Image (tube, rainbow over all chains, first blue to last red; front, side, top):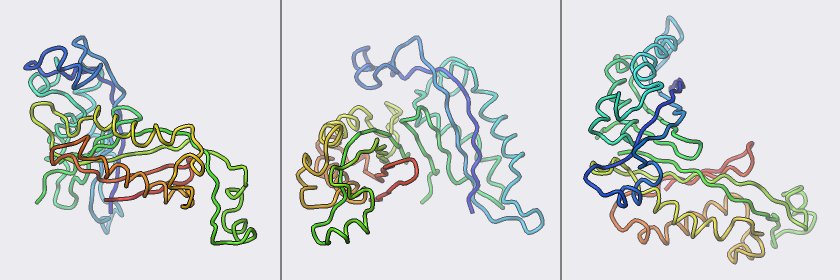
Length: 138
Length: 140
């Protein structure tokens, strides 16, 4: 069974590769390459997979899941400029793809408890762009 | 491997009518959608792709290339068109959203390697929301 919790955070970022020229960055990332930054209301959905506990009837305590999401993602990223304030985005380009994978790395140690496992991290950057990461499994 | 979903919109009219059925049979099967004058929808099209994240760009797919492919092959052909009379395949085939999804997959598949000459990303899923109450999904 899958359970999914949603949180959101608002942050600014710049998608720019310092090894490329302004024109190349613009061609690759479009207006997201503006060096001054821009922002989004990111919507994060995190899914856990497991079976309901026979005693509690729950796959995972949703309050506890909310606490983990707030501590590991919302508090460090909400109302921040990701490139300047949230490592590793001082050296990793904070595309939606890289933010999604970083969120997976932050969450996995707290959510793979043996009873459940992290199944999917889904990040919606805008209404028209969503990224999903299911981990790297053979 | 990352999965990326991009959403597009197009507005089209259509009429559901099968030449294999009688007038009464069409009316019973398709109901209001069989109205001979047609009707329309604001379709939402979600195109999902999967691929490894390029360490140099941080991207799993070139969004500009995807937008250009969908824009040229789907939106330009379907948006603000009457599907039955302006999209040749639907002269014969009933433009249900099922058939629309199959046609979109066919068009994207046909031109995929022009937009993405490398082995990644791959087309993973097409999903069409015809209205907010129904949606149709096709996986590769």
